[in-house]
Image (cartoon, rainbow over all chains, first blue to last red):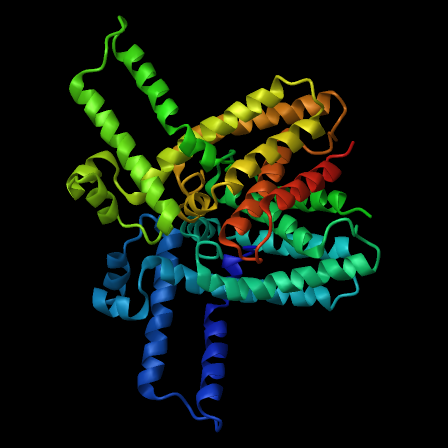
Length: 231
Length: 231
């Protein structure tokens, strides 16, 4: 599974980072102390690198953005960049991790709702599609670099595992309620749903089959899935 | 769509190359003449590079095979290798192109059969899965490198387009015969079927969800698709 929402991910970069810093601080020091100046400066530069890179990916596309462009804007050296990220891809993987965090929020929100399985899946994927659609250029970069693809980026397997676990819980609840078939195990069903969604998004991102709305294609994929899982 | 069968592809490397050489010869000289010694030598070395690389990918895995290993076995220099292929990936893309040629043969064979849509799809994907399963190590390399992925390797869009065109024809015939629903356009359905198959193969290749038979998972994906397209 490789669900994502880079628009939202990018939007929440700052707050996600703030939360993470907080967690890190909690971990290293039981008594909360403010970050040292040096650590704060490092965190700030890291954040600036991500934001600058994302801005350039959006403006010129991923392929046309060089690390050189990023360091020039920030007035830092290439070695400095490489102390924070081993490659251009690595910046996107950071965005990807936050993308997964955002998907997890959506999934949890559906799990806590009273809606039936069909309503949950329709609302979930519509929300993700909307966020992806709002940020096509960045999403294209994420697809091309495989930044959220657990097959190509093994470090994504953890965050992806959390998301797929929640999707399985939605499907398992659907089976228990008799809303979806028990012919297929939940393990297969979650793979099918994700496969359908990912295929549509990947094709859309690189526009292999002509211009079309992502929302409609995702709706169509969800409706197809719901036909397949009818009890 | 990114259907493939590297086992078969590898097996047919020699004959595919022979056919291609023949076509090239036909094109360049209306009166058929044997290839020049120089051209024959070049074609032979190209073929040897592919075969050596594939053998090493199978034996040690793609990531653990270096261009250096390939050139040492063949007793050629690195620059010589790079005159034939710009990268390690490029060797696999050559394998991938032949993989598509092999898939196209399977699709044509189904189209010329008298079977109904369900039987055609079951037989088609079972055959592809069998060939992929017989050559997991090479297939893993194809997945990880994106060698047959039209999103990541734009030169695959042509061969992939031919294959997807034939899959659409199978689905369109199914709609005309009333064997599958008309609720979704054929364009969407071919994307769904391919998305399901690809997801299963990708997951299997990198074994993210534990050891399991590919054949069973592909059968399950095809049965799910057939439920979804019921009229």
